[in-house]
Amino acid sequence: MYKILTLNKISPYGLDNFDRKTYTYGTEMDNPDAIIVRSAKMHDMEFSPNTVAIARAGAGVNNIPIERCAEQGIVVFNTPGANANAVKELTICGLFLASRKVIAATEFAKGLKDTPDEDVAKQAENGKGAFAGPEIKGKKLGVIGLGAIGVLVANAAKNLGMEVYGYDPYLSVDAAWSLSHSVHHAKSTQEIFATCDYITIHVPLNNETRDLINDSSIAGMKDGVRILNFSRGELVNTDDIIEALGTGKVAAYVTDFINEKLIGVPGVVAIPHLGASTPESEDNCARMAAIELVNYLENGNIRNSVNMPNSVMDRNTAFRVCIIHKNIPNMLTQITTVFTNANINIVDLSNRSKGDYAYTMIDIDEYVHTELVEQIKAIDGVIRIRVIK
Image (tube, rainbow, N blue to C red; front, side):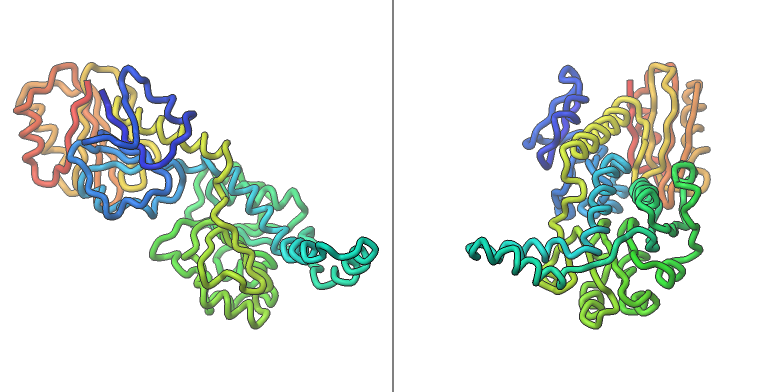
């Protein structure tokens, strides 16, 4: 029986993928085999030696200690694309909110409460000029990051009549096939900054992308640029964006990541992290996360891992040995030699690497004795070994 710890409320649409004859799950679970999480902070969490996997029901994994998990042989999954449509829709909404001062206008309208009926229309007509804003049709939109969300945003904006520029140095083949052929290929973020009236960011947060939007990059943008951030708050330097809004260099900043400094700043539309807050998105993310865990626990297959190489191999034998190890020379030879010395035939083998780590799956027809497992564990650089029957 596999034990799954749930750290947040997880959609039943996802949990239903755990066969109750094989799995048990809940918010209280000692020594879980795996964890499924949404936004719970895990950096101070101590993991059980039994825990082999964590699945984040969402794309961002900043709440999970990725490197520490790798060192302990815990595979961390996320669910890229599962919430893409939800974020795309809110980003398109953000385009309109950045242009037409709808929120400020509705607040003005609320202020007319208790005004005599005959004066409401007159005051509304006199006041509406303060909330005028441009149409997006014909304007240039720069999309930085053409993953699952960025591609959807670029295509939708194109369909709304915008001229779209996209930049992504790591554009995948699948994304390239999905991207509208009429989207301009920008060669750098600087080209986006210099060219576009609107800029939307869809990249992960890491050391290279932190403060991507700062005083220096803003200086290279068009006057009156409108910036959207539905990826991670730290991609935009808060102090620098506030200063640019004050000078008029930036006309509007729409973000799904509110902080205390941004509240009440003219030109800021701060949304309380609603990007993936749709029932459809929560269902999709939970289902994808659960399927990833089941496939890894039962078959050793890794798909959509952020700290280990993706590795999928068809299962045709009774036993599969799964080994997480350091990506160093001679590891595979040492591992296979253990099987050779035990006179065990290897039916199939897969070896993949990602950065400092590698993952090997070996299919055999014979039962793997504890002695052989201990011999593999003893190899310098081996982090974790599992035998799946």
